Image (cartoon, rainbow, N blue to C red; front, side):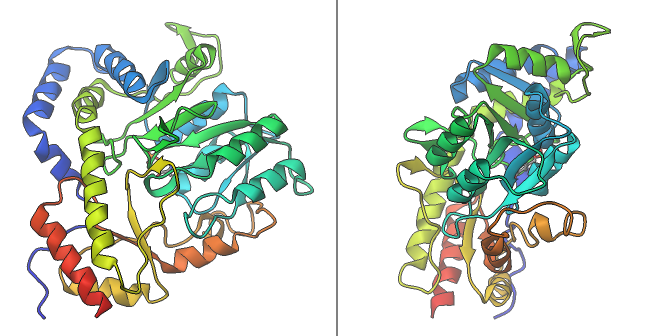
Length: 378
Ligand SMILES: *Cc1c(COP(=O)(O)O)cnc(C)c1O
């Protein structure tokens, strides 16, 4: 079969703009015409609307999701001479944020079914930390691909050890556990608003959320040179602000987020049905949790062959992520690992691949992808 002329891309942030073009263009014009471009009315309105949508009392906008994590760590007083536990199977951003504040990342392994942190390994390192490691002061729980990690035992282990549990919600805007939105369980939560995320700006953006007013105020100061009043730094700060144009765009996109997540679930259900009876297992769903399918991830030892066959049928795929953080040259042989040595992480990185997933996929495109999935089984 000849390759079709138009590939269905694995991600397509431009489609999200086109879907709401009129409202987004109007919002951009409004922001541009206001004469105020950084930390103004649009940003404040977005923070209020995002917090109301999420169910926290406070949200603080910032420059990107990596900064949102780093700002939370700074706000909690976590930095040099301390360690923060997280996973290696994540966007490098999670680990980069820990090192940005001067702390040591301790990288733990994943549960191979859900690709999220091995909660038992977290409990074990909190109880019995690896020798030579500075004290673990926080854990970053990454809700990868759009669904909750094994949060209950992790929250319990963190509380027992007296360390902060921070949620990395860069891939799970709107996902729930026990009927409650992710990002409302930990001390604070960080959301990336990168264009391809479930809630994506048309540029960089980030937002963090918490119910702790004091922490939110401290972080709001830290994001702008530690200012509580203009030009006077009462805290050591950084510059990580969300601009007004992006905030105005995000206010429009927030109104489409729930419907977008519902459409992602519908597409996931169609993929599930197409895979039924074949050799590829649909993604495992955690019980009593709602997945928002930031990614629809399959796993096979024949990944490269399958990706090539799908490409031949006009279907783009991606790998999230091809090299785990602990095996990348910037990190390998340098960052400490938990007792499991990230063995499942290394295996998963060899086998995972992601199908196209965004709300703007049309029904005929979804059917084309499903037909291709059925043909892989034959
Ligand atoms: C995208 C992402 C981030 C970082 O977000 P940026 O906005 O790109 O800085 C952090 N963690 C995870 C899991 C992500 O997917």
